[in-house]
Every structure is written in C-alpha cells, then in structure tokens.
Image (cartoon, rainbow, N blue to C red):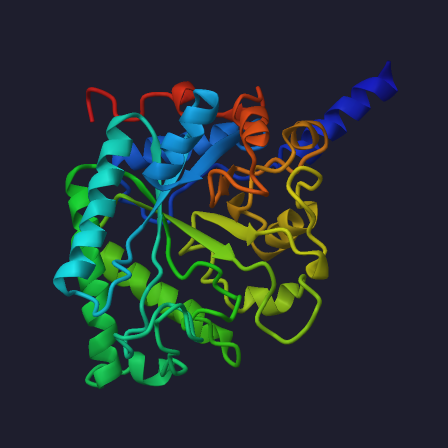
Length: 354
C-alpha cells in the first residue's frame, strides 16, 4: 500500500510541475487577462488546451470533429510590403477584428508577429529570401538601441504601428497571449543575434518597456518561444546555456514555449508517436519557474501518452488544420480526447463585473 501511494505521489509530481504562485510580469494586467492567466495556472499539469491557427483552422477543425480549439493564434503582421501601406494595414486590421470575435465567442487569443525587417521594407521576417521577398541584411542592433539613428527610428516606427493595433484589443478588453520574436533563438529571423544573443533579449525588453510602461497595454500576457534548434551550427538541440542567453528574463516573460515540427535529423518524430519530452525539458531548464507550451506543432502530440506519462504541455497549437501529417482521423482523436480542453469547456473569463 505504501509503495502504491508513493508511486501515485511521485507520478503527480512528475506530470504536474510545482510552480510558485502566478504573478504576471505586468502588475497592472487587466482583470480579464488576469483571469486567463490564473486559469492557465490551475490547469497546468492537469490538462492541455487544444489550439489552432486562425479562423480558417477553427472552421476546418469544427467541420471534421464538431469541436473548436480553446486557443487560437492570429498574426499581427500585414505581410504585404511595404509595411504601413493600405494593403499591409488592412491585413493587420482583419487579424485584430477576428481576434475580437474569437474572444467574444469565449475563446483564448494568442498572437505572434512575423515582423518585417525594419530596415528592409521589401523583405520579410526571414533573413533569407522568402517567396518573392528579398533577403534581409543582418539587423544593426547597436544602431537600433541608439536614439537618433535611422535604424532606431525605423524600429520605433514599427513598435508604434503595431502598438496602435494592439491598442484596439486593449480598448476592447481582449487579453492576448503575446508571442513576439518567436523562435527567438532559431537564427532564421532577423531578430536572432547569433553572435551576441543578449541583443535579442534586450530587444524584447525594449518592446516590453514601450508596450507596457509607455503605451499602457495592460492586456498582454508575454509568451517567449524557442526554436526547434538554436542558431549555433551544432546538431545538438539542447544547448541550454546558449539558449538562456536569448531569454529576456523572468521579469519580462509570463509563459515559455517551443515550436516543434517532425524532424528526424534533430530527433523529433511524428506527433502520433512523440510527445516531445526532450523539448519540454529544454524549456524547463531555460525557465524553470514558467509554464511551458507547445506554441507551434504539426499536430497535437499523442494525447494518450501525454495523459499517461507526459509531458503535459500548457497548450499545443497545430499550424495546419488538415493535411498529410494532420489527417482528419487524428483531428477527431485529439480534439475529442478527454485530456484536451476545447473552447466549449472554457470558463467565462469576461465576467459581468469586468
């Protein structure tokens, strides 16, 4: 009997990481956002939120299995060059409007930003060529941090423009799990400084100070996600000390995560067979005091394994709703699984008194 009891206790400890009481990095977080953060803390280690990418993904998943994701991501990038032109702004506005509707339906909103290189309006978020977009030069971090330089003005122009759109969500009292500089240590986006990772961390801190302290955007829950592998030329995906150099710090981050897609070279299998324990442990070591999410994935990892031995991700967010690696039968298995939380199971975060 004693051995059985001890096994149960140890199993619960392993599956449900013991974290300190949750305190947002923004002490002035609005009540609606605080309600979301508190809820996430209560379910962490117990169940996992099922996610989706955009409204079309929601529609596709619902058509297959009758359920909708609990958390959906939207992009604050307008994609179409040049930034801040009519086409760019209309795309961002559509994302903002769709995020408002999703929140009103009772879902949780998360957002990333495929931030076009501030000094290369004809480029993209990627350093290399991306579709018809031209490659971007390495970002001049030293100039960006120096007021009065052109690069600093370009950077602040973009921060202000995106803050203006986020202001609409703040005014509508929509909490946003804000995931800027995603895949922060990967090396394929311009914001990753491979040589001096502390510059990337400082860029995050600069954004935080501007959005929270200057613009008073108190609806943001800050999510820092790592890449499949770090940017140093090394097959080792772990590299904890190197990854930690990109991390902005516990005072700037509410939740950490990682983006994992099947890749046999780096040791990650198909989601039907793998739950990415190694990736979970990487982020536990980078930020041991934070909840850990699977911010992007091919499909929700095997829920039977997650429920049994873990890891119990805070949420899992498939990037594509259907396809070769995310077929309809797997959508039905995962989104209908008792371990996964869908939108209909969420509490009302809005509250009449808020």
